[in-house]
Amino acid sequence: MKHIEFTIDGKTMTAKPGQTILKAAEAHGVYIPHLCAYKDLIPHGSCRVCSVRCNGRIQAACVQTVSEGMIVENDTPEIHEFRKAILDMLFVEGNHFCMFCEKSGQCELQALAYRFGITAPQFPLLEPERELDMSHPDVYLDHNRCILCGRCVRVSQDLDNKNCFQFVGRGHRKRLKVNGEALAETDLRVTDAVVASCPVGALMKKRVGYAIPIGERHFDQQPIGHAIEEKNS
Amino acid sequence: MTSSQEATNHPEKPRIATVSLAGCFGCHMSILDIDERILALAEIVDFARSPINDYKTFDGRCTVGIIEGGCCNEENVHVLEDFRKNCDVLVSLGDCAINGGIPAMRNNIPLRECLEEAYLKSPGVYNPSGTIPNDEELPLLLNRVYPCNEVVKIDHFIPGCPPPADAIFEVLSALLAGRTPAIAYGDLKYD
Image 1 (tube, rainbow over the protein chains, first blue to last red):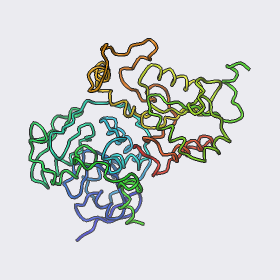
Image 2 (image 1 turned 180 degrees about the vertical axis):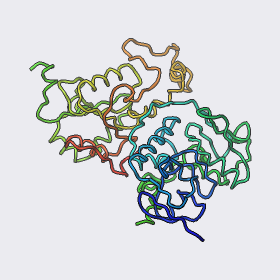
Image 3 (image 1 turned 45 degrees about the vertical axis):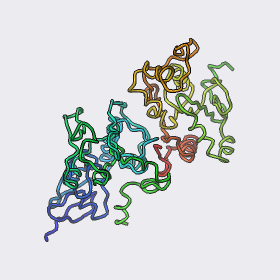
Image 4 (image 1 turned 120 degrees about the vertical axis):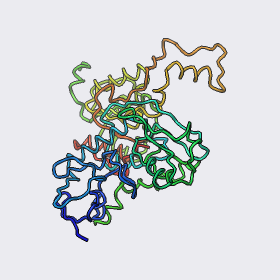
């Protein structure tokens, strides 16, 4: 199979035809921070955390495929500030109370903010009014923490074949809705793949919170992306 | 020396002031958690207005002001403005100072509803007169809980609930040594 040559931050790499920048970079041990991209699901390109400068233009690395001679800028001060601003906006647009959130230490949004060294939001908090759906016996949905990454929408459709979640509205009115009056009325089961797919504490299994002690949680010792970067060293 | 002269002249040792606004004092506990290093710190700084020495007013200019908690009432705002006026550098210590924290959970509930829940409706409340405390001496509650940086300019932030002692020590050492603080990965926490 023909390989495509391209560069990330001046380093020459190869990619398979049709491979995205994100996947090709990962194969070479280069971590491109991302949130909505999840395993092998069709990428969504909605969170823009994986934005890179690609032949001079900002593109989402999770959806943009590699082309011959492509010049990608990933680890630059400009991109760093850009991603930081996106993460900041995700925080201020919701109600993220890390201090009591069951996802803390395992949360990908929080882990990215740690990785970027964010100490305080640079934008004013919006403090929106959001709902908490506790109707389901085994799973809860806290819209305060939802960042509209669309992972649950895609996992429920593509992996669970159920279509329990969908987006409604556009722009700042965009919301996640469940296929029923409340979560309990959907086909959702606690064993569905979707339950583990939420990067934040929005879709959570009940009665298992705080099981892992502080210090042993996923992102307590090593920053997010560490496993990918380790391949490089 | 008049107090206005004092305000423009730094005393020999750098002075640190601290306060807990709408906080739980957990962040101050974490300051004490720097353990025996507090002795080394006490060698090189003086504590001004702080719950640690119970001084309640400023008696001169301070190098660093450490703020725990956000602003939930008018007194918090006055104290915070006083800190800004009297300190060269202000540090927001902990999640409440940075984003309002737990007290900010009331921000989407009308103030009257909060007070009625606390003093009238909540199970176990014994309040035969059915009144909500409204004494002149009590500082008026604000419509919502404000992060400190929405009220005054804050120079440095140490997140955490509470922030790890090592993070506090690093920021204080850096500020006293005149370098930019760099909190280590494991010490940057939001919980």
